[in-house]
Image 1 (cartoon, helix red, strand yellow):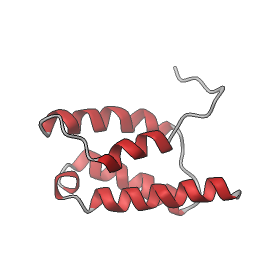
Image 2: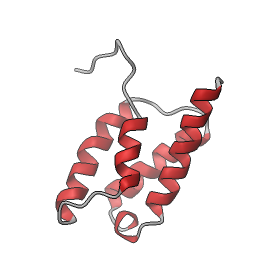
Image 3: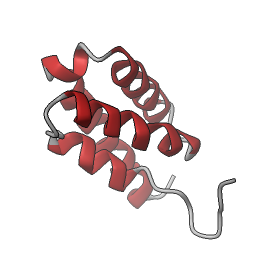
Image 4: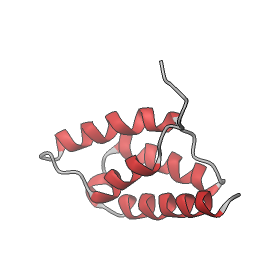
Length: 90
């Protein structure tokens, strides 16, 4: 595993841990479950890009339910978990 990927995975693990420590995020079942899946995959050395498809709408829903406030950890996660160049979704 190259250093850049390892650093990104470590950052994803750190951000998910920080996000899960937030009581508002922890109490949101959908977001909590998704963050646990992301952390589990990052700990195993891989983050699957299809999770970004789930992460964006889940964070949007969380933001709407929380007076349009989005914790910085969630915004950073969105930028780290990116779809690879050349890959297009349906």
